[in-house]
Image 1 (tube, rainbow, N blue to C red):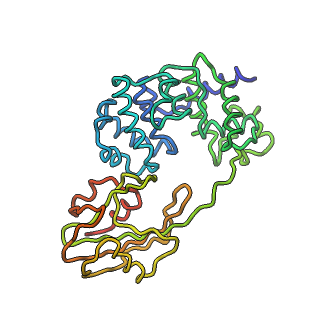
Image 2: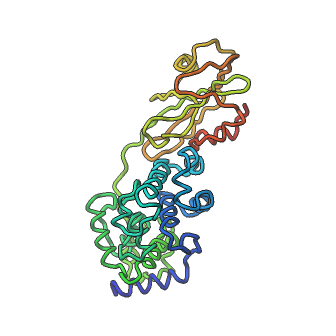
Image 3: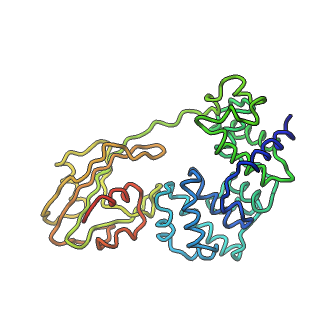
Length: 350
């Protein structure tokens, strides 16, 4: 059966079931790259509106390159993993400055771009110019592990090598673009993480995991690192018209985003401890301080859970504070910010 029939069965399923997605109707490597960066660690349903906004706001690589970082981060707001947006912006500048604005189509050139790894370079080269390269993402890992009974953990170097070799052996080199789209789509729609459609699966008779009743056990993934709890104490320091807002400079996932002055601790602060912490930002007399929100539900990131408290601090006169800007209330939503801050502002009235 393998590998010829594997491709035939897969491609037939794809032609019957594929979604009509805008980046599939183009061989433009810029749009394909844009979609791939947006869809990293993001479901299509969530990423599609972002792709449409980005492609409309920045229709060419030149438009993206000349935008400010804040414009890019603001448009990205809500997608998470903000390093993707910063790398996207940096890569656009590389294409304009080093490639005269001609977006590369080959793996050899694509892999040089900021934020482009083996998967993304292979995908763009395959979809844009049919370069014979097999792509391996989360969907592909799942499909191959289940059908072929591969127990090697997918998040190990040995697993990456083993699955890449298997994917390469199955690739239809004459139609790499269709094959790669098909196997990823099959994993996204049919061979899903939970409740896969095994009863109607075209591979059912030859699927190892279905025959051995181990569908839920594959693919194997080693346990993640221990989740760390952190407590964020935000201060909404304001007068009647303005509030202090600052840009994160730390090299983390929220770099370049804006937030209120913040204290980070390993345990929840008492009211007195939080009150004393205000001195880190302002030392003038305080008219009012009040705890207005304390999130008992964690804001979950990949390796940490954040518990946020928001204190409103009212001053008669708003002084300058190190690293902070004075922002008019009505302008605050113009700034790029994390989902944590954005959700808080949805229910807060200055």
